[in-house]
Image 1 (cartoon, one colour):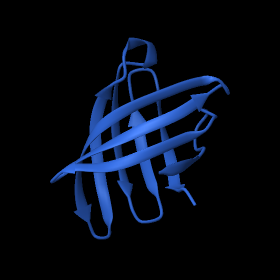
Image 2 (cartoon, one colour):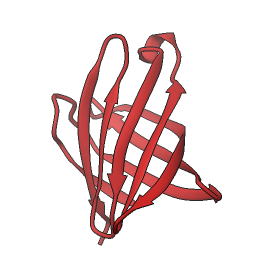
Image 3 (cartoon, rainbow, N blue to C red):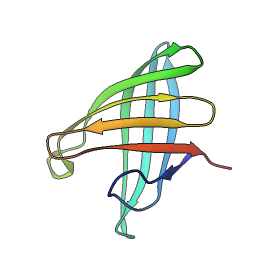
Image 4 (tube, rainbow, N blue to C red):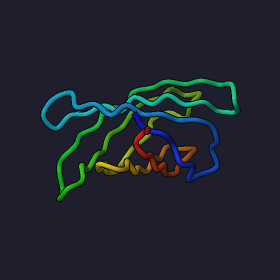
Length: 101
């Protein structure tokens, strides 16, 4: 489980559970709170491979028209961080997550 360190204009708590689902396949399940009250949960399927000591991840997920449509994710995860960029037709940004302690 990971906690967010805000890197863009979005504010609120965010947690992520990154799971290995099969060889080279992962899923990131995000739990986020926006504006102090709006709670969202969604899962993104990711393809992953090791590069040095970091897991490279990328994938796409359709979060629905109201959330911005299809989002693309590209990032890397190590023992102490999960950094990722995301992009859709109406939004883009990055997040930097650290392990929960």
